[in-house]
Every structure is written in C-alpha cells, then in structure tokens.
Length: 275
Length: 176
Image 1 (cartoon, helix red, strand yellow):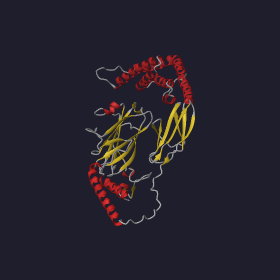
Image 2 (cartoon, helix red, strand yellow):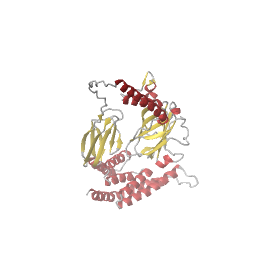
Image 3 (cartoon, rainbow over the protein chains, first blue to last red):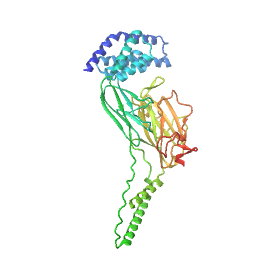
Image 4 (cartoon, rainbow over the protein chains, first blue to last red):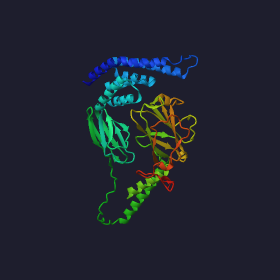
C-alpha cells in the first residue's frame, strides 16, 4: 500500500515543485550561459564545465521522464548523475524524493540533510526540504547496540556489511524498516547475532556480546590400576620400542618429503596476495 | 604416549620447514561516493611491492594487487599478504589508488583520482602470521609527497591479545 502513496506523493510534489525546479535549473543555466564563449580550437576549463553542465541537464530531463513513468531506479540514477555533473540543488532535491519513493528513508534523510547543509535554498524549497527531512527522520528505524566488548579485531556487520564501531555506546545505527541481521564477531569468540524486523521509526535495543571460546585443555584421567605383569613383559616392551622407532622414522621421512610444501597459506576468509 | 610423540615430531618438522611469512592486513575503505574534490570515489585498488619504495611513478608489470568496488558504507578489506623468504626482511610498500570507477582502477596504467602511500619497514617474520589494520578510509586530496611509514613495533604478531606495542626494548616480539 505504501508504493501507490509514494507515487502520488512524488507526482504531486513534482507538480508542485515542477515550476520551481525548472526555474532553478534555468537560473543556473543562465548563469552558465553568461560565461565566455568557448573557443572550439582550444578547449578551456570553462568548456569542460559547460559540457558537464549540459550533460547534467540532459540527465535531469531523463530523470524527470523516468519519474513520470514510475521508473524510480532509473530516475535515481539520472538525478544522481545530474547532481554529480552540475551540482544544482534541484537535482539533489529530486534524488531525495526518489529515494523516499524507493523506501530508502535513511538515504533520503541523509540527502535532505546534505541539501540543507550544502546549498543556499530559497525560502519555499528550504521549508519543503525541512518538512521532508522531519518526515523522513520519523520513518528511519534505529538499532541501539550495547554490550560490545573492547576486544581486538571486533567486527560488527549489519546485513552482511561491516559497520564502523565508533566510540559511543550504545552504538546507534539507522536502518530502513524491514528485516535485518546484526552480527558481532571476533577471533576466538563465538559470534553474537540478532535478527529482527523493524517497523517505520521503531527503536530496538540490542545487546551483542561475543562469547570467548574456552581453551580446550586435556582432561586428566584417573590413574589406572597397574596391569598384571604378563609373563612375556620384556618382549612387549621390545615390540613397543620397535613400533615407536618405526613410526618416528616414517615421520622424519614424510617430514622431509613435505618440506617444500610446508608453507603458510592465506588465512581463511581473506583475499590472498602473493608478493 | 606414542601418539603424542609422533604428533610432536610432525609439528616440529612442519614449523622448522615453514619458510614464507604472512601479513593479515585489514584495510579500512571509504564509503562509495566519498568525494575527492568534486569526484566521487567508487573503487579502490591496493597494490603491494617488496622490491621498491619509490612511489614517484606508477608501478608497472605484474603487480600484486586487488581491486574492490566500494559499498554504501565504510568497509574493511581483509587481505593475507604472503611473502617469500627473500622478501621477508624487505620493506613492504603499499599503494592505495582511489578511482572514480572500477575500470579506471583496473586499466593499465590505472587512472586514480588520488593515492595513498604507505611503507612498512618490517612486516614479515619467517613462519609467522603478523597483523595490521591500515586506515585508508579518508582519501587524501592529492597524492602525498612522501609515504607514511608504519613503525615496526605497531605490527602485531607472536602474541595474542591487544598490546600498545609489539616490541620490548625496541626489539619486536617476533625477533626475540
């Protein structure tokens, strides 16, 4: 049920802001047009900038067309490209609304924060961006992770991706609504794992404590009663000694045979690089 | 008793014969899109050399290296760098290339936006797996004029756990 609402929201917003965004783009384009006329014989940095801007404008138009056709992934790619090339705030605004349409509320929130931080916006856009930011912030779910011990090579993975541990505890992670897996691992420790499904804006407290794997020590055995001495005791000792000598000899032989192969290999789970 | 004797014999033989060395290197990488100037970085190549510490020109030939596309968040690239006996006492040079695309990193020569240069004067010890975590999550604005040199006492090895230094009296634990 969410997607149709996103869809109509986005389109309504597009209608509402269409003129504004077009104006912003036109304004930037006009500013660009006032730059010196490029000399085709020797391209200058201004030529490069103009070409990037024109390419950005084309990407922006493709993004609007994709959004009209509800092709959100295509729209996102084009708006991101447009912003990368031209740095106009209207492109970044549309990146945010497209992320929102895709249900990527964490990314939408971060993009709106960036828009408000990095650009001087007119009052109307600023108000709308701030309103969307508040809305997106309430939809972002949070995992508050405590219990992480200060052990060497502790690693935290959220949905399979390594997550910076930071220094603040509890560690707060922003996530979109849905199913997630959080795992803390460390050498010589059993991994601690949490799995759960979060709703929009939910806050979940998670305690993850990897457990040290106990060192295996040999279990002392009770002294056994002395075996009755066999009548052929001395001959048994001869056989035992002979067996030890034969096994040791075989071991030395195999050792020398394996000499060339006894090399360190890459640690499992790591990419091997041979110098 | 016999089993212990034979197992011990094999263990002694195996360790005595191990001639190479390994460095388990964790490289902290930035998130995809981290900007260098106006260019977002999407891929990183990590190159290694045990025969040069000259970063002035691109390394050529069959360079030991690995390339990764960056993820949405910072990630750790987990490598095992294996050195042959003749390379063990040589400095290990690490060159990190930050590229706009994977193709830019993998082209020959590579076309990075910026680089980071690191030299570990002594990273390896015969028959030992050493460890180090290299922070490459913040690409420099431009390639550095001189490499960062890692103190040999910061290379973990020959003892478990967390330590402030891996030397005593200036001698690495793996040399004792």
